Length: 487
Image 1 (cartoon, helix red, strand yellow):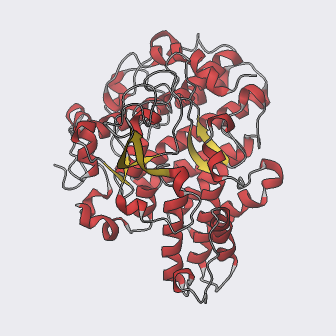
Image 2 (cartoon, rainbow, N blue to C red):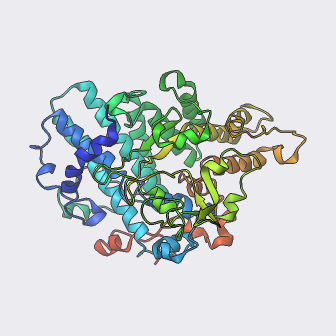
Image 3 (cartoon, rainbow, N blue to C red):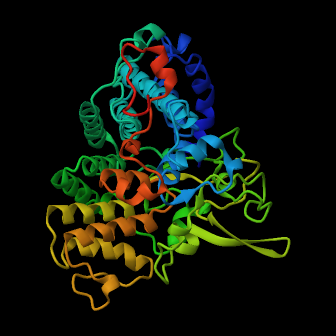
């Protein structure tokens, strides 16, 4: 049976039509498909929803922007070779400005996805179809809209909150930046609505769609970002306690999480679907992350682009014996019989069908992330020596073949005697557990640790937000303002 990744091909024609015009906010009128005459059946809505999922594959989302921002912006990875791309190097070195294409592509892709989600949410109301399916499709669209706004508000701060279909470019000129708190309120509302109507899991063709657990896990992360510890702990514990229904679990073998033959596994909560040899539906990560100059030693097909190279600091972050290290990264490769010392990401190694046409999905949420967030939330509520927070931290460590940490361990490296120490223990564990999955930058920002950790790499406090793309300000200078110190 096919899964949802195969449906992206069917949605490709819709996406092309929907993206026919790029103006303010990159929210475009969508010609005849924006009219009520197109959305007449449940199948029409399903195709439109597939187009929303399809935007997750865009360059400005999980194809490249989210790992550039999530890892390259942090101390996890860097650009050692300038031939990897000037725009990427600027982000890496905190030199990006309003003209950098990372900002503009991220902005454009997310608002196109939001527009498509708004179309589904608005047009589905008038369609005669199964009511249960109608609620589910609406919930999926709201989950996706919430995910996109969550990315946007974390990257740019205040962003325009658009909740209706923009029928013509002129409507876009009325939007200004909405306070981030209001954007978060909408994200939470969308996720609560989605949680109410989405199923715990899918079968066959629908595997890969947003689930109840995905909505709950993302809501827990939203609460963590807002520092609402009680709400976060409650929601994340619901995910943990609901494993009888959603069947989430830590896989015994860390490597199997990322095995392309084991996609959408029981540790995965939500991942972006890619499929090689399927008309542009393949993923680029094997090529993107292979070191420039490595030939076919790392990626057997296509050019190595060197766009996400682990730092030595990242390499040294792993404890001796950590089973995750060799799965996540390598420190050398053999080319023409010679060993070349060079770090590179290994989680997304594979055999692409062609250049930038791999089989690897991108995992957005997984169960280990939830366990560590819950441990963090419990510690923020109150530090308890060897309490519940330790239990969940150590579940993740033990899967990595590491010794448990405790409040009074005889080994100082494993001793976590107070709340501040536990915060650092979680920070460290999240870094190595979720390495190269696009979390590190966002973790440092939400814990107010980015500047202390990254100032030696060139970060200044204002770099916590990315610049609003200059193109957006030029289009609507009366309403669109720039983030501080990017003028």
